[in-house]
Image (cartoon, rainbow, N blue to C red; front, side, top):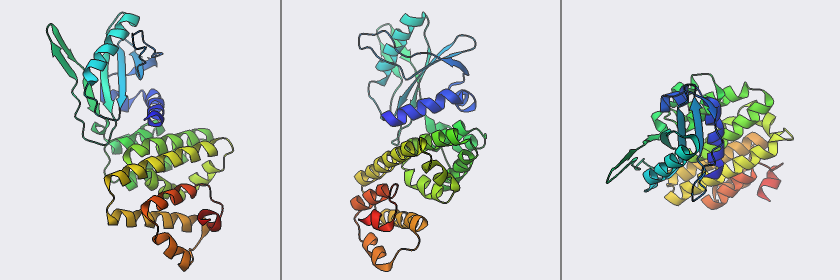
Amino acid sequence: MHEYDTALKSVLRRVKGSALRELTGLSVVRWHNTDLPAVQNRRADMLGETADGTLLHIELQSTNEAGMALRMLEYAAAIYRRFGRFPQQMVLYVGEKKLRMRGDLKGPHLDFQCRIADIRELNGDRLIGTGRVEDNVLAVLARLGDSDTAIRRILRRIAGCGPERRADAFRELMLLAGLRHLGPVITREANEMPILNDIMDHEVFGPKIREGMEKGLQKGLQKGLEKGLTKGRREGERTIVLRQIAQRFGSVPPATLKRIEALPSSKLERLAVRLLDATSLDDLLG
């Protein structure tokens, strides 16, 4: 979760507008250092402040944690110790499984509640329509209609950014897409645009993007394998990899095609990762 967590916090801190306001009802004007005084030396994910001084505490969560309400109560107390006022709180769930966490905690003389929101409450297509690249990147985690069409629109928006912002946005998109197993889709669509070559050839950002893509592909494919991919899904993955190979190196010889089609899913996964750095077909299959 660490890579996703870092990318998502970076995007959310820059959003400030429509997406964050739709989730929380508040517009943050500044973000605070999130180290909090506590016995456990706990660090909050995000702690912002609105123009009228309201504190907004957001925790990012990719799994259903049974004790989340207690954890949020501890955060609230620590924030009060530091700032002298309680925050509005929200757990932003970005996981794939159905949201099951509860945000309430009751006991003698205690009635605590915090909001727990699934990021899929956001309309991803509407986020893409805002024209802001941060909203567009965040949309990959939201509720989407046609994911392939959405990815193409997001990539076109990223392609219109300056070189440095384009590289950062693409890296963030690849990392967050790993939470939705969309890494292969993004790689396939990006291979059909000049954006990928432009970013991958950048001497500073290229290596970072390749690292992010490798992690996204590995995590996304591994998660799918653990669930037990159907035969049709495996065939789809082979089709995507073969299309990527043809895009990079031209037509695939029949003998090589037969060899790739016979690969099991585990080796196909490694082949997809090696494709990011291979300079020739022999290099890829060597």
